[in-house]
Image 1 (cartoon, rainbow, N blue to C red):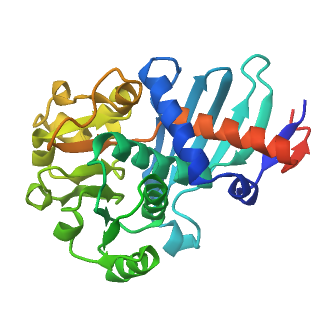
Image 2 (cartoon, one colour):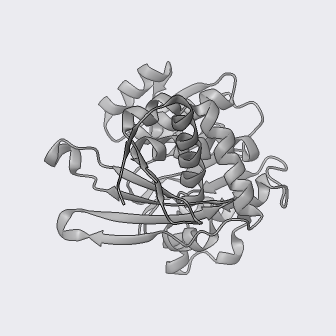
Length: 317
């Protein structure tokens, strides 16, 4: 059987937020019901090279695959390359034949943005007037696109340590660049920084703010003041993964926050096993990125590529 090779351009012809959001939401629900096989992501740290690799395998509903992706923050300035690049291998679980090898950089961006939008649907106020973005890179743009698809109208408030980056993002979003405390006081706040110390503090956050904490996806990374976690309903994408590499990982290992304080997983809420927002509480979605989301999108991309005749078939094996 031949393997279908799909470039970033091929993937880009297929993926839309209207496709990604319901696909990722269904993957969350399946994860919440315990229907997926998904070991915690494996990290390969490369301090000498200023980055790391992550391997993310999963199985769900007759499909299996693995994403191999990096994080090299200095890539743009050192090599003129993206900080994040990924490859996805989609396999037939019955025969182990590689059905497709595809670009996973765009796949990752769409699933990350979609995951934030799904969390906001279940945990934020129903009609957000403002969405704040702390960190204005590629990931923030995907979250902006996903929230534009999920909510009818809101004003974007942007903050970045680079005033130029915040200004560019604000112009693209039709919003405004502002201070960190202004961006973090919105109805919804999306953080996507590589920080290893808090950038959003408790005094910034409103009484019913929902926070999508997307940047802390490796051990030692942290974006939020731990006092926010103590005052919030905290929801993880995956408990085992989040305890070791999510927003809660630093305060848990420092002993200032307990695992028992976590409310549950977003999948449990999406599946109807637990309630989402119930009142005016602060809510936090602590996202590390789920392999089952990548698998669900990769399977959808593969099927649509077959239907459209996209990609290049090769005898890989």
